[in-house]
Image (tube, rainbow, N blue to C red; front, side, top):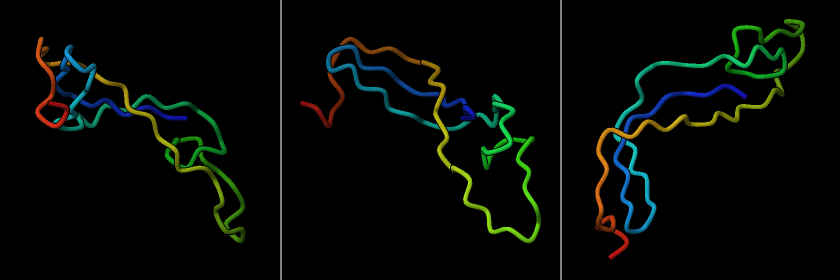
Length: 72
C-alpha cells in the first residue's frame, strides 16, 4: 500500500487532523498488486482488479490546543 503525504492542522482538544493539501510526495510500496505503485504489472489482456487503497502520511503544519470547529 503506497503512502501519499498530506499537510494539515492538528487539533489536540479533539484529536482531529484536518488535511489542507497533498504535497505530491509519494512513498512507493513496490508491490506488483498495488495499483498506485510503479511496480504495478499484469498482462495487458487482463482487466485490472488490483487494490486502489492509498494511505495518507499526515504531516502537521499547525497544532491547536482547542477543538476543531466541527467538534464543538
